[in-house]
Image 1: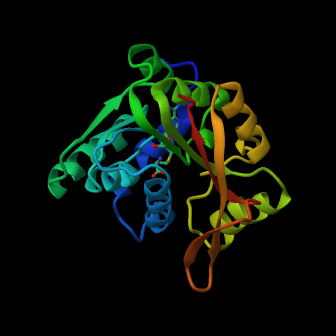
Image 2: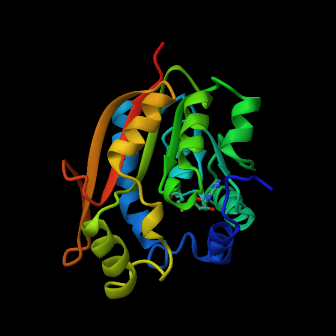
Length: 234
Ligand code: SAH
Protein backbone atom coordinates (compact mmCIF):
# COMPACT_ATOMS: atom_id res chain seq x y z
CA UNK A 1 0.00 0.00 0.00
CA UNK A 2 1.24 3.46 -0.89
CA UNK A 3 1.86 5.44 2.28
CA UNK A 4 0.85 8.71 0.66
CA UNK A 5 -2.76 7.72 -0.01
CA UNK A 6 -5.83 7.84 2.20
CA UNK A 7 -7.78 4.56 1.78
CA UNK A 8 -11.04 6.30 2.75
CA UNK A 9 -10.56 8.87 0.00
CA UNK A 10 -9.82 6.17 -2.56
CA UNK A 11 -12.90 4.10 -1.60
CA UNK A 12 -15.09 7.22 -1.81
CA UNK A 13 -14.07 7.67 -5.44
CA UNK A 14 -14.29 3.95 -6.19
CA UNK A 15 -17.85 3.74 -4.83
CA UNK A 16 -18.97 6.54 -7.16
CA UNK A 17 -17.00 5.30 -10.16
CA UNK A 18 -20.05 4.12 -12.14
CA UNK A 19 -21.40 7.69 -12.01
CA UNK A 20 -18.22 9.31 -13.39
CA UNK A 21 -19.45 10.07 -16.89
CA UNK A 22 -22.94 11.21 -15.90
CA UNK A 23 -22.56 14.90 -16.70
CA UNK A 24 -25.55 15.71 -14.47
CA UNK A 25 -24.43 13.51 -11.53
CA UNK A 26 -21.92 13.67 -8.67
CA UNK A 27 -19.08 14.65 -11.01
CA UNK A 28 -21.03 17.40 -12.78
CA UNK A 29 -18.58 20.11 -11.60
CA UNK A 30 -15.62 18.26 -13.17
CA UNK A 31 -17.51 17.99 -16.47
CA UNK A 32 -18.45 21.67 -16.26
CA UNK A 33 -14.90 22.96 -15.63
CA UNK A 34 -13.19 20.61 -18.07
CA UNK A 35 -13.38 22.81 -21.21
CA UNK A 36 -11.94 25.74 -19.23
CA UNK A 37 -8.94 23.87 -17.84
CA UNK A 38 -8.35 21.99 -21.10
CA UNK A 39 -8.15 25.23 -23.10
CA UNK A 40 -5.92 26.86 -20.46
CA UNK A 41 -3.48 23.91 -20.51
CA UNK A 42 -3.54 23.69 -24.32
CA UNK A 43 -2.81 27.42 -24.60
CA UNK A 44 0.22 27.31 -22.28
CA UNK A 45 1.53 23.93 -23.51
CA UNK A 46 0.01 22.95 -26.90
CA UNK A 47 -1.04 19.34 -26.47
CA UNK A 48 -0.96 17.89 -30.00
CA UNK A 49 1.79 15.29 -30.28
CA UNK A 50 2.93 15.75 -26.67
CA UNK A 51 3.52 13.03 -24.11
CA UNK A 52 1.19 13.77 -21.21
CA UNK A 53 0.73 12.28 -17.73
CA UNK A 54 -2.51 12.91 -15.79
CA UNK A 55 -1.98 12.21 -12.07
CA UNK A 56 -5.14 11.34 -10.09
CA UNK A 57 -7.04 10.99 -13.37
CA UNK A 58 -10.13 9.30 -11.86
CA UNK A 59 -12.65 8.33 -14.56
CA UNK A 60 -10.63 10.16 -17.19
CA UNK A 61 -12.57 13.36 -17.93
CA UNK A 62 -9.43 15.47 -18.47
CA UNK A 63 -7.19 12.63 -19.70
CA UNK A 64 -9.61 11.66 -22.46
CA UNK A 65 -10.13 15.24 -23.57
CA UNK A 66 -6.36 15.78 -23.83
CA UNK A 67 -6.02 12.60 -25.93
CA UNK A 68 -8.84 13.88 -28.15
CA UNK A 69 -6.69 16.99 -28.75
CA UNK A 70 -3.93 14.74 -30.10
CA UNK A 71 -1.76 14.18 -27.02
CA UNK A 72 -0.39 10.76 -26.08
CA UNK A 73 -1.83 10.42 -22.58
CA UNK A 74 -1.18 8.16 -19.59
CA UNK A 75 -3.64 8.49 -16.70
CA UNK A 76 -2.71 7.22 -13.24
CA UNK A 77 -4.74 6.91 -10.04
CA UNK A 78 -4.78 4.65 -6.98
CA UNK A 79 -8.53 3.97 -7.04
CA UNK A 80 -9.10 0.85 -9.14
CA UNK A 81 -12.74 1.31 -10.16
CA UNK A 82 -12.46 4.80 -11.65
CA UNK A 83 -9.55 3.49 -13.76
CA UNK A 84 -11.74 0.65 -15.07
CA UNK A 85 -14.49 3.13 -15.92
CA UNK A 86 -11.92 5.38 -17.64
CA UNK A 87 -10.57 2.49 -19.72
CA UNK A 88 -14.04 1.37 -20.82
CA UNK A 89 -15.13 4.90 -21.64
CA UNK A 90 -12.08 5.51 -23.84
CA UNK A 91 -12.76 2.24 -25.63
CA UNK A 92 -16.39 3.18 -26.25
CA UNK A 93 -15.46 6.66 -27.40
CA UNK A 94 -12.84 5.19 -29.74
CA UNK A 95 -10.10 7.45 -28.35
CA UNK A 96 -6.56 6.36 -29.17
CA UNK A 97 -3.25 7.30 -27.60
CA UNK A 98 -4.61 6.87 -24.08
CA UNK A 99 -3.78 4.33 -21.38
CA UNK A 100 -4.41 4.01 -17.65
CA UNK A 101 -2.33 2.54 -14.85
CA UNK A 102 -2.85 1.98 -11.13
CA UNK A 103 0.40 3.39 -9.78
CA UNK A 104 1.42 6.15 -7.37
CA UNK A 105 3.03 9.27 -8.80
CA UNK A 106 6.00 8.76 -6.47
CA UNK A 107 6.55 5.22 -7.78
CA UNK A 108 6.19 6.22 -11.42
CA UNK A 109 8.73 9.00 -10.82
CA UNK A 110 11.26 6.29 -9.90
CA UNK A 111 10.51 4.39 -13.13
CA UNK A 112 10.06 7.24 -15.59
CA UNK A 113 11.96 10.33 -14.43
CA UNK A 114 12.01 13.26 -16.90
CA UNK A 115 9.68 11.50 -19.37
CA UNK A 116 6.63 13.73 -19.92
CA UNK A 117 6.20 17.01 -21.83
CA UNK A 118 3.15 17.84 -19.72
CA UNK A 119 2.08 16.62 -16.28
CA UNK A 120 -1.40 17.49 -15.01
CA UNK A 121 -2.66 16.94 -11.46
CA UNK A 122 -6.13 18.42 -11.06
CA UNK A 123 -8.45 18.38 -8.04
CA UNK A 124 -6.31 15.67 -6.43
CA UNK A 125 -3.82 17.28 -4.00
CA UNK A 126 -6.62 18.05 -1.52
CA UNK A 127 -7.29 14.31 -1.15
CA UNK A 128 -3.71 13.27 -0.32
CA UNK A 129 -1.94 13.06 3.08
CA UNK A 130 1.33 14.62 1.83
CA UNK A 131 0.58 16.74 -1.24
CA UNK A 132 4.14 18.16 -1.34
CA UNK A 133 5.40 14.65 -2.11
CA UNK A 134 3.02 14.43 -5.10
CA UNK A 135 4.23 17.84 -6.31
CA UNK A 136 7.85 16.62 -6.13
CA UNK A 137 6.95 13.48 -8.08
CA UNK A 138 5.12 15.51 -10.76
CA UNK A 139 8.16 17.77 -11.13
CA UNK A 140 10.46 14.76 -11.46
CA UNK A 141 8.22 13.16 -14.11
CA UNK A 142 8.35 16.27 -16.34
CA UNK A 143 11.08 16.62 -18.93
CA UNK A 144 13.39 19.63 -18.63
CA UNK A 145 11.43 22.36 -20.44
CA UNK A 146 8.16 20.52 -19.74
CA UNK A 147 5.05 21.90 -18.05
CA UNK A 148 3.30 20.90 -14.84
CA UNK A 149 -0.29 21.97 -14.02
CA UNK A 150 -2.13 21.76 -10.71
CA UNK A 151 -5.57 22.72 -9.51
CA UNK A 152 -6.96 22.56 -6.00
CA UNK A 153 -8.95 24.54 -3.41
CA UNK A 154 -7.71 27.44 -1.28
CA UNK A 155 -7.88 27.31 2.53
CA UNK A 156 -9.70 30.28 4.09
CA UNK A 157 -13.15 31.14 5.49
CA UNK A 158 -14.60 31.92 2.06
CA UNK A 159 -13.37 28.62 0.60
CA UNK A 160 -14.93 26.78 3.57
CA UNK A 161 -18.21 28.65 3.05
CA UNK A 162 -18.38 28.12 -0.72
CA UNK A 163 -16.55 24.83 -1.40
CA UNK A 164 -17.91 22.88 1.58
CA UNK A 165 -21.06 24.54 2.97
CA UNK A 166 -22.23 25.97 -0.37
CA UNK A 167 -21.25 23.19 -2.79
CA UNK A 168 -21.94 20.16 -0.56
CA UNK A 169 -24.78 21.27 1.74
CA UNK A 170 -26.69 24.11 0.07
CA UNK A 171 -26.35 23.63 -3.69
CA UNK A 172 -25.62 19.88 -3.40
CA UNK A 173 -23.24 20.09 -6.35
CA UNK A 174 -20.99 17.54 -4.64
CA UNK A 175 -21.75 14.65 -2.23
CA UNK A 176 -21.38 15.54 1.47
CA UNK A 177 -17.89 14.71 2.71
CA UNK A 178 -16.24 15.16 -0.69
CA UNK A 179 -13.80 17.69 0.75
CA UNK A 180 -12.08 18.14 4.10
CA UNK A 181 -11.19 21.72 5.02
CA UNK A 182 -7.85 20.90 6.63
CA UNK A 183 -6.60 19.40 3.34
CA UNK A 184 -7.20 22.56 1.33
CA UNK A 185 -4.01 24.23 0.05
CA UNK A 186 -3.15 27.91 -0.12
CA UNK A 187 -1.70 29.11 -3.44
CA UNK A 188 1.38 30.34 -1.54
CA UNK A 189 1.93 26.83 -0.11
CA UNK A 190 1.51 25.16 -3.50
CA UNK A 191 3.84 27.69 -5.15
CA UNK A 192 6.47 27.03 -2.45
CA UNK A 193 6.23 23.24 -2.92
CA UNK A 194 6.64 23.79 -6.67
CA UNK A 195 9.69 26.02 -6.25
CA UNK A 196 11.18 23.57 -3.72
CA UNK A 197 10.70 20.84 -6.35
CA UNK A 198 12.71 22.92 -8.85
CA UNK A 199 9.76 24.26 -10.87
CA UNK A 200 9.24 27.84 -12.07
CA UNK A 201 5.74 29.19 -11.45
CA UNK A 202 4.28 30.60 -14.70
CA UNK A 203 0.63 31.38 -14.09
CA UNK A 204 -1.97 31.38 -11.31
CA UNK A 205 -5.67 31.61 -12.18
CA UNK A 206 -8.84 31.54 -10.10
CA UNK A 207 -11.91 29.57 -11.13
CA UNK A 208 -15.26 31.16 -10.37
CA UNK A 209 -18.79 29.73 -10.32
CA UNK A 210 -22.14 31.48 -10.56
CA UNK A 211 -24.85 29.18 -9.12
CA UNK A 212 -27.63 31.14 -10.83
CA UNK A 213 -26.28 30.79 -14.35
CA UNK A 214 -24.41 27.53 -13.51
CA UNK A 215 -21.40 28.92 -15.37
CA UNK A 216 -17.70 28.69 -14.52
CA UNK A 217 -14.97 31.03 -15.73
CA UNK A 218 -11.27 31.76 -15.12
CA UNK A 219 -10.36 34.97 -13.33
CA UNK A 220 -7.77 36.61 -11.11
CA UNK A 221 -9.69 35.66 -7.96
CA UNK A 222 -7.93 32.65 -6.43
CA UNK A 223 -9.83 32.76 -3.12
CA UNK A 224 -11.63 29.42 -3.66
CA UNK A 225 -10.79 27.20 -6.67
CA UNK A 226 -7.55 27.88 -8.54
CA UNK A 227 -5.09 26.53 -11.09
CA UNK A 228 -1.30 26.86 -11.09
CA UNK A 229 0.97 26.41 -14.13
CA UNK A 230 4.69 25.64 -13.78
CA UNK A 231 7.62 24.83 -16.02
CA UNK A 232 10.62 22.64 -15.34
CA UNK A 233 13.70 24.67 -16.32
CA UNK A 234 15.76 23.41 -19.29
N1 SAH B 1 -8.18 14.65 -11.78
C1 SAH B 1 -9.53 14.20 -12.12
C2 SAH B 1 -10.25 13.54 -10.93
C3 SAH B 1 -10.36 14.37 -9.68
S1 SAH B 1 -11.17 13.50 -8.35
C4 SAH B 1 -10.31 15.40 -12.64
O1 SAH B 1 -10.01 16.52 -12.22
O2 SAH B 1 -11.22 15.22 -13.45
C5 SAH B 1 -9.76 13.08 -7.34
C6 SAH B 1 -9.03 11.83 -7.80
O3 SAH B 1 -7.83 11.71 -7.04
C7 SAH B 1 -9.82 10.54 -7.61
O4 SAH B 1 -9.85 9.81 -8.79
C8 SAH B 1 -9.01 9.81 -6.53
O5 SAH B 1 -9.07 8.39 -6.66
C9 SAH B 1 -7.63 10.33 -6.79
N2 SAH B 1 -6.69 10.17 -5.67
C10 SAH B 1 -6.89 10.42 -4.37
N3 SAH B 1 -5.78 10.12 -3.66
C11 SAH B 1 -4.86 9.68 -4.56
C12 SAH B 1 -3.52 9.25 -4.45
N4 SAH B 1 -2.89 9.22 -3.29
N5 SAH B 1 -2.87 8.88 -5.59
C13 SAH B 1 -3.51 8.92 -6.78
N6 SAH B 1 -4.77 9.34 -6.95
C14 SAH B 1 -5.44 9.72 -5.85
